[in-house]
Amino acid sequence: MATTYIRRLDGRRPPQGSSSAGRFKSNPMRGGGSSRRTSGDGIHRSSGGRPSPRQGGGGRGGKRGFQEMQVDLSRLINKAVPAAETPAYVPEHAFVDFEVEQALKDNIISKGYVNPTPIQDQSIVHVLAGKDIVGMAQTGTGKTAAFLIPLIDKVLKNANERVLIMVPTRELAIQIEQEFYGFSKRLNLNSVVCVGGAGIDPQIRVLRRKPAFVIGTPGRLKDLMERRELDLSKFGTVVLDEADRMLDMGFIPDMRFILGHMPENRHTLFFSATMSREIENLIGSFLNDPVRVMVKTRDTASTIDQDVVRAGRGEEKFNKLVELLKRPDFEKTLVFGRTKFGVERMTRDLVRSGIRAESIHGDKTHGKRQKALSLFKADHVDVLVATDVAARGLDISGVSHVINYDLPATYEDYTHRIGRTGRAGKGGMALTFIDG
Ligand code: AMP
Image (cartoon, rainbow, N blue to C red):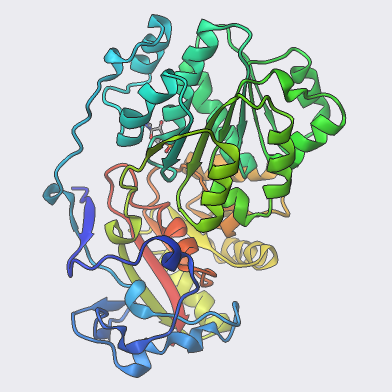
């Protein structure tokens, strides 16, 4: 029977907000960690109590990979408990209640959606009323439909309306378009994905037909504007999705450039998984009197079983990885490495060790990334090895394990990584390799 995990046994929550975005800190006396014993599989089990200074002093783990990173083990170990203990969210609305076109409602229903998720429940009415929105939500909360449903309705009611959706990664753009297809069936609406790493000419051809929805990454959108193939002066609506990630990736100048070419009185929807002063500044400059929807984001760090794996370096570490991946319970595993080169090499070595693995990172062409992703999604490979940027925002169902082979740079990256497992009511496990 599948078990759903929801909260730490000790009731502690990892720090949220800006502190969680900081680098891991080594502080063995933080407490709340656990004394650990090593079982034969090298995975350390938590059994309560404080870590000893040696156990907590995971700074040793930072000697390789991220030089400056130190590890607080207590943040990497968590025993999740069954979900039955948390009350289910009771939505205020049902999809049938929203005042959207019947044909759109039919598509929502045929997608199998019955009840809105919290972000949908709390933002759709405001978007329908034309309000600017700040939605604090991660991937996995249903935020895509929270903006697509009311915006499709807006376009249906006004054929001249055009919508720009700006996202940090190609993968996210494609995922949004796929969701758009589901909602826009038989509605005679067009869309185009404008992302780097894919040929620009086909994008230009579609753009010339003036599709109602343009979904793209900032760099490519700017490029298309500079070639005079994208005129944003007629776009009345913009969605900035995963704005915090766009900030992290250095897209702010491009975003300012792009928004600077849109009408001042545009309708702006802004989604971010985290809040910070810089994000507040963006909200202040891009939005007009927004409604803020702060649904409790999925507390991934507490809903997933987490543990560390002590292993030496080099071959010993790699062999440990192979040993884990060959276990039958590691049905569908996402392995994170730090560099594109390391990810590529690890994948090659895994394949040589008899493991069905694919890789996804920024050095691969767009087509190859999509291919790897679909092989993994369709269970044709069991392991996907990824860098942080490549994996951000991916919606892959049924991931049984996430393995941090290399430590992430920040705790926020850690929660993003492990959030790829334990989704949609399924249990999941995250394991982090540390020096041992
Ligand atoms: P998102 O956070 O937008 O990436 O959505 C995460 C997943 O939840 C996607 O696979 C959606 O198709 C699915 N989803 C979104 N909203 C609903 C809903 N109201 N009911 C059922 N599934 C949903």
